[in-house]
Image (cartoon, rainbow, N blue to C red; front, side):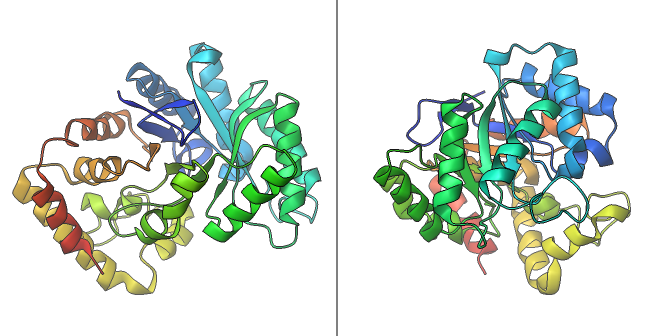
Length: 324
């Protein structure tokens, strides 16, 4: 495993990390979740990502349970949660968002579910237009000063919003955002490569990127349609299929098909090649993997070996054939 600093902080995260989105607390059982966490940790992964909204808190309960069962040393791994959407169906106004109340109470709830006394990383899962950024920054700073959070950041915030949070923190001598969790893959590049570009040097921003495989499009398994047993075909994931494929089905699938064809030509597994491409970006602190089977996770870890295998011409060709 390789390790990278979280932006300009001193925290060293594994270049590949593991997330519970969609799978834990729903798609897979507790035994498989335990096998996945064990395999990830045994292969050097030290960052496990979660959120209050994943399976309405059940994903955090499962992760906390299996980590405790495996007796992983608390100083040997990092765990995160994210706050905004709430952990119940139809949350009331005080059960969601980024108010001081919900930020604090969601943190305490995540600590209980994950069975830890602090969160290493805590993300604002989306911007909250109903709460002043000053209030959210202050709430996060208070949690850090209380020792309940070590680093806080954002997820899918605009560069303008992140910069404003950092400005407020500096002006009031508070802890500002250290990282952003955003989607990044060969089909979704603009935010990481263009919008956030000034923030890496200006703020020392780290990135914990999600969906390196474009929710499976870049593996090739949807080239001929969405199978019922796939993640996008799962009965509870109709919303995800709409989000991933949406109204641009033919364009996105055509780009994915061109990518998988080139991967075959190169003699590489499409999933490993797509992840390796993400790892080549020096502003990516960690690439988050998701998996429903241990074999899938172990295969994707092979992406580390591909980063230096091909010359620049190959990577340029990959980018050209997947461009919009």
